[in-house]
Image (cartoon, rainbow, N blue to C red; front, side, top):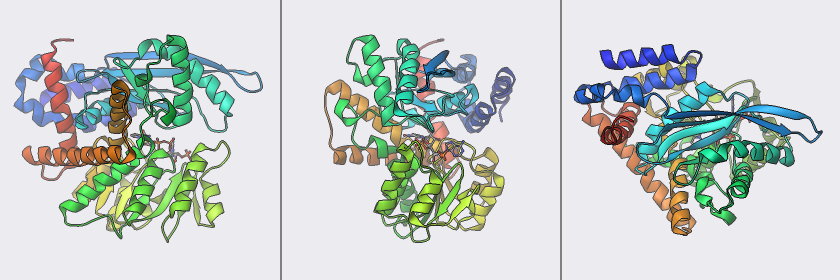
Length: 447
Ligand code: NDP
């Protein structure tokens, strides 16, 4: 690594203690960007990298709410407004007990490059709370969302910062958040949030977009070597929004999804999920009481308690649950099973050393910021539809999504090639996403 990049990275690690996920994401990204800084010595003079790794603004707030028994709880709420060089901050809200500053900073940092890769004018942000929606009633979720938005509303807006969903935040939560925003602002600014219901400005295909997009990305990777998804065995982790969309698209394209999982273990279906099972994923995702074990029970499938699905033989592996699901040992199993295509649906599901091992052993790796950008891309299409008072059909949105995913793949592949990294999509995506942000930051002066 160049001295400049090395120094900024070591300062980042020193100045952000106790933030391992942020360190991990920054290490992976900065390692890839070294070549860009070699070509642009003027960036160092403008302290571009020091500014790039520092969020423009970090907002933290208290979220008090009352449960159904009248007990008062307090959670921590956050919004990281990381970078607005190419557009308003854009990125999801995550409600999960593990949420902290480190996780949101890694997600926000990745989001800058992901959003740039879509080719759409959106900056990077991320937020959420350490609230656990599991086991909560609708009323409790609404109380929480209203309290959360009562703090957040003053920091967001259609041209300022446009949050969306993520883990624990789906259509229901976005609805409650939007309702409270509208009530406080006294204006119908539906471009303030994406992932909304269709009746109040949501886009068709938004729920499916991340999973569909990841499969379109896989399809493009296979096309490059004259292959298709048809007939391929696919291992997916997670059973949430992204896993569901991916499972549906793989199945539509003639592939066979043999696993899904949750934090308690994985389900194996040797025949591959069918439409009924894929639909049931939505039910357990929305249910207060059901979990992944109930999926196994309902369809009489083997359930591997406490285990992850990485030992299952597959042509394509798609981690779609959460960060750090795949470590070096898991990567060894994936390589040993002869997998060719590894596509990250979740954000940073793979440790840096596992990514390196997969790549060194002939597995094509599609990094999250490229492969899962379909969700935010359709969110940006939702923003366009809101501002132009339009609603595109499913087919129109799906076509645009597919074109965007192909474009992201090709631009990452071309950039990697141009910089001498062959077909390294990890490096290609980082460099390609960064170039546009860097140019915009340079043009906008020292801010
Ligand atoms: P959901 O809340 O719909 O589903 C999350 C899934 O991950 C569930 O299967 C859940 O299982 C599992 N999970 C969550 N936390 C953990 C954990 N700590 N350990 C193990 N499993 C866990 O979320 P999404 O599907 O929306 O998001 C999944 C991933 O995709 C995340 O990394 C997210 O950032 C990323 N992503 C999502 C986008 C979107 O459009 N939704 C866009 C781009 C990226 P269980 O309930 O059993 O814990």
